[in-house]
Length: 440
Image 1 (cartoon, helix red, strand yellow):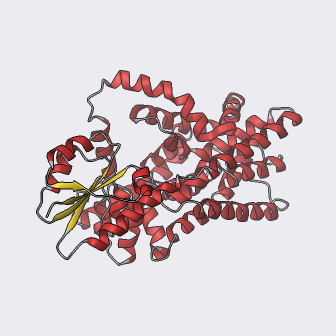
Image 2: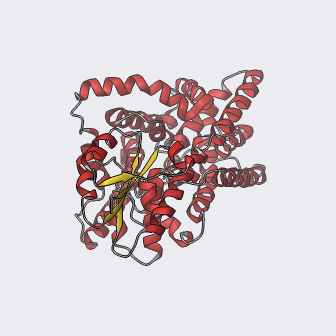
Image 3: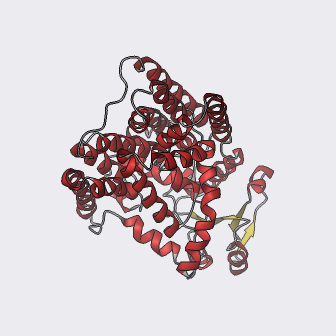
């Protein structure tokens, strides 16, 4: 690690790579068009972006989510799908550093491997869908892949800048420069200095905004959320570990299986060790918290190089067949966009908002309904029955909108006889939404 890694192939791949970036952008725009309503976390990011766009650089920091994604979306926050378009563009640009990182791992003489990596990154499934869902993963891919390329080339100041930007998206970005410090401590410490500055600046910004000097507010939030049930930690981790293989395949598909082969063949490559250690640390963190495919997808940029390495260890006939299978599965997964009945949440929000008189409000456990009604979304957790009951008893609350399938709903309804169920269109009941109004 003391010597910079060999450079990526140049010249002949520039035009095909640019074409694949355009393909990646178009693919992501297709998925944006197929996703009329973003994820639950996505509306928090969109709300933050709207506050930044209005010039409010204080209120959004009270969210537990890091602010960089919202800052990037803010210039187009006033446009329909503006934030998703920003994510589609940045997610498409991530193809370039992912391809360059793959060239370093596989070897720059393998010009076709460079383009295969770009193809896998361009036509990804979940990473592309997450642009439409408004998650951090597409931008995180651009930042963390760029940091990895810089680190593999021995450019540790630059690695720190990219890792620091990635930290403003997802806190686990710290794992990459930490892994480089393990294998190149004499030089990689520079990256940790820059990352430390990024962490301090985020904490300072929050402090200036009147909040605690804390660059990781979501860490405490997630810790509290993960321990609400009081489960035994050891048994919980064993259960999460058992879920890891299934989540791995859901997140990465055929490319994930090829990456496992790539891990085996990369053990003797000294240059690949920081990437392998980063992935190992990431898996430990995920198992210690909770195993979800989305948390794995964040590390897609580091999976692709090993998937290509595994592919290159196969005979050409198998190589072509598995590449085709990987792309086909990615396209299938990508096109399985979110259920269109999410539109019912926008419909309910519009109805309630139109019915409210000045001074009236409504209570709901559906965060997207709040957002589309022009209000601040909920924190990323489900409200308890007691919280909903207490909020609904305020005299100013006219409507109560509940998820009919949620475990808290029967207790809430039983405790609030002053609310009566309203008849709503079948599209809303099919989504599992009940609307209650306060009795006159």
